[in-house]
Image (cartoon, rainbow, N blue to C red):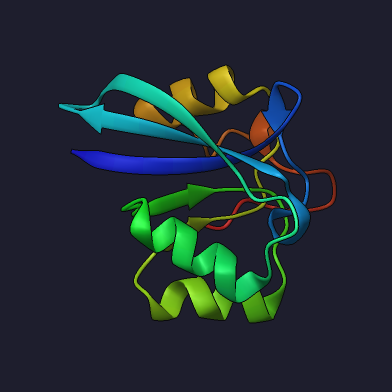
Length: 115
């Protein structure tokens, strides 16, 4: 099983991972979504956020913008980042599963996605 995390604001990818308050966890098996759950990050420091994501067994985060510091912290614990992504969570997840996140419709304005 692979667990992918997407920071959310309403039904969209949250623009900044560092300050998001909610993350949806999506479990994938055989390239299909099998379950979703949500975690809340209100008031947590970056170190606490890394710990929560590690304990949740997150392997990949699909997000918009992220600070260099937070990016380095996540990479140090072997969490892979796909940054520069915007859009509705369901559409982004569908694009991830079909390997089409490199479509410009999913790029944050002014950014090119970084896989």
